[in-house]
Amino acid sequence: MQFPAIDPVFLHLGPLQFRWYGLMYVIGFLTSYFLIKNEARRRSLNLDNEAVADLIFCLAIGVVVGGRLGYVLFYDLAAYLAQPLKIFAIWQGGMSFHGGLLGVAVAGLWYARRFEVPYLQLADLAALATPVGLGLGRIGNFINGELFGRPTTMPWGMVFPDGGPLPRHPSQLYEAFLEGLVLFFVVRLLARRFTTPGTAMAAFLSGYGLFRFVVELFRQPDNQLGLFWGFFSMGQLLSLPLFLAGGILLVWLNRKKPVLE
Image (cartoon, rainbow, N blue to C red; front, top):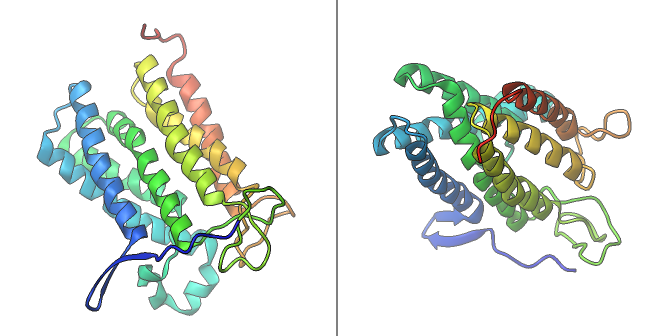
């Protein structure tokens, strides 16, 4: 299959360019606002519309700052040490989910202490909404023709503009399906069945770690890193601890806890 010719810029206004990838972020944050607002109301948390908007803004800062610093530290530190000012050139790409996760964790901790909201409850709200943003972000990666997969002989393999002549796995779509759609329903199902605060957060961490580890088997390794020990990608090395820690935490939080009927 030939990669569809999608212009990454969906709107031109004079010198301004509005890209699909950025639009996905905007839609993701807007959707998260409504999801978090509804879930906070369902859980009887003292978060009005303004408080939820402040939370989304705080988490957005955590995503951008943490995501950028995570990419610098985990994926291309030597290059950025050689040209430190490029760290601020986020429009050139280079964001890490795992760094963004750390940024969100820190931003959420600050918000919880500042507004006296239970941290685990806040983490659950974020976990219930985050898969939507992840799925949309991977669709944005697909439109950009980036982060494509390894060569494949499967009939749905695609020839990407920057991927050479060989058809490759559309791994962005695999991630959009697993980390977005599937993870959204898995986290929501477990959060409905178990009442313990932190359950949604633990389910998200474990589920994301598992799905990302699996998809990395089909995703093209980063050129500057390659594979560690001939098998593991950086994404897998960062995701495996999430899967294990999230699974252990999920079991520990709900040991001998009643299940909602």
